[in-house]
Length: 424
Image 1 (cartoon, rainbow, N blue to C red):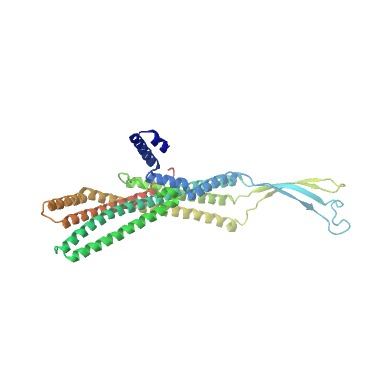
Image 2 (cartoon, rainbow, N blue to C red):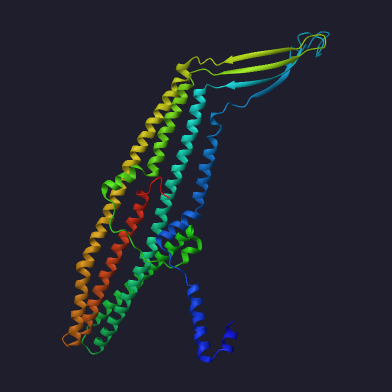
């Protein structure tokens, strides 16, 4: 198509058309930046851990169906009263008491027990569902942390690269000063040391970015290779009351609440076990041709005796498990609240520091650069002063980016604490 286009058109028309073709193909082949929200969505769709837990939720839901049903009936068959001595030994037909028997037996647990077991199965399914949502929240936090670490490592590396360029200019200026005896060699050595330190720092940031990209590939596969989009954080962290409300409804706390309910139901099942169940047997017995066949019906009833040694200890153990579950939930709630408040304070502090840098420190640094540059152009200053002012400005930009990284990492942590059981 490209050759036909070139041959049939005028030269300038062909060149212009082919330029459009190349631009269009370049745009089509461009890779869209990977935003934080897209990374979270890709990880949620592709996580094998979440897929396994979804299967667990489905399995628990299926197990709740037969929990209220009666147990399977039992088929039994055999021989009663078979003589083993005398003239009729091992004969199935000559002795009137010998019978070939077949029958059915059905156990009938109390309806209360079956209802409690069904309720217990439903509670276990609900617990699995909340554990799935908790895993989703934890996954979002881990992906967000890796995304933030790569994002800020790449931007810090870029800022250090700017600083390296400024330091190299400063080194060249000092070299010229040393040749003209206007600069001490010790000053040049100091700049060389600073330059090597910056190169080492950039290598460190590049290593952190590569490590974070490798972590992202665990959840995002090939999408982890895409460049990252610009980060836009919400204007302000959630209020303390809103955060506490989120934690009360957090899926991990809810899963521990389900544990309390499960333990309570198990205690009720242990209490219900003190009441007897019963079973029914129906049998048909065939005797020899000279004797009549028989039908028998039998009812069996459990005798829950010696309850102080068999049932009551089990009930007491189940009640202690209820208290254990309550204590674990309370401890987890306190831990989450404390961790969330610490992360919130970290983000609020970083937000305030960032505002101070943006409103005061960075404008002052830019003004210093302008002043030093104006003095240099007017012949009242030297190039080293300009480069030093510029280096200080870049240092402040680097500190500002590090503060942004602290705020971003705190935001990633808050993604876990603000996740709700009904979140998608």
